[in-house]
Image (cartoon, rainbow, N blue to C red):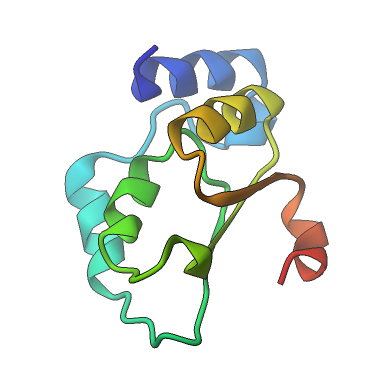
Length: 102
């Protein structure tokens, strides 16, 4: 299932976990990622990964997938993300628990 459909359905099912009904578009995602400039020993943490709309742009900016940590509260989106990005560290958790993963 395409990511925008997956995200939209998840937002209808549990709007408090997604905060919006529509995922970020590629133009805005690219603008977010433009500001990322990681050194080899730094990590990028994405809170509220959603269906990966911004993640795709962020991955172009990191040298090693091990520099990425994603946190997604919604169980359905988390399962989708684990299939879409099998090599990334993504956790089904609240941002409140971020300290456990960094």
